[in-house]
Length: 440
Image 1 (cartoon, rainbow, N blue to C red):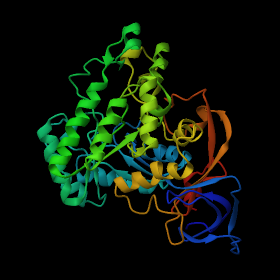
Image 2 (image 1 turned 90 degrees about the vertical axis):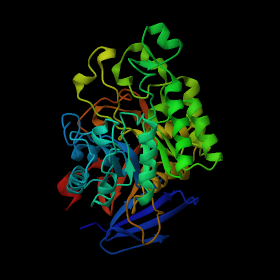
Image 3 (image 1 turned 30 degrees about the horizontal axis):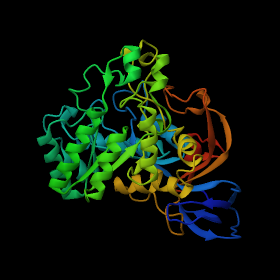
Image 4 (image 1 turned 60 degrees about the horizontal axis):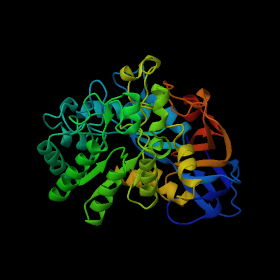
């Protein structure tokens, strides 16, 4: 059963433009009442003075690795990491083994997420069979399955063939789906190790040019316009990509885009130490690109922040740079990084954070019951966050199976104090609850 909770004096920011302090009464998994001076006999009282109340965070881009790569992460451990970071829903990318390209696999992932109980795990289906880019996967079967898949991606691989991409965009129109593209021209990035530029030349590492991302985005927004379908651009990272998305939106094309927390804060200079924690796809870019994606998120060109949480076992990172795997974990740190990069710099307010980290990702993924206003009658999936503390991010902050975080040893602001998933506290007073407590 869900708990009866009385949250007193929270600063409510739910993406609806209101900034107010109020009490919230939570009962039977829903917000029963919002107001001042509320009371309920037997309710657990939460003193939320100074805490920001946000709709539960929604991540449109998470790698949970299960089935097949449980040494890196499982749906249970990834769900725990998500709850610790303030998330109540995550979209699980399909690059598993077997690939999530059939109704059977996505339904298995859905069931494992339900059993874990920490967050809503919404599977993403592969665009092509085995993510090989050769023929379309069972898009319709996944859409009509119990998982009700609406987002499809070959993330980790670009849907490079324009005909396959066009057919995918056409197919998903029938059920209001969206294709989430990993924008990376494979020919332009063969052997690439980091962002192409002065630093790559100095280090003698093969460069990853910005045009490899930008050219695919340019092609795909035109395909989306031609077909009249929805396109979502994963982990946008360059100033040129921001310009293309801005142009496409002015033209009325149905395109949305995401940026990761690490592309909002970190740049290519960190590669100079050859620390493989900073090796990621797309690579960390120039300081000018970091500024451009911040401005793009602030002005609405970029719609959402998505973590691209990509766990790896220690041996995949504890090696020489060229052999190291791409990817960073990010669920536990995302909200704190967004505060540092966007809120503390004055580029976003907390209502904007609710929009880009909850309301908009839920809307793009067509996920009901998440990203909703903090109002009476709505599902009680929400996050209480304290923006005041500043402390060093450490291994104890990581709740997943892997530790490949670029923020270890770095000072970050803020702390998730409570996470409620459908009325159940998965994080209580800053502590992650065990599964038996979540379902008590």
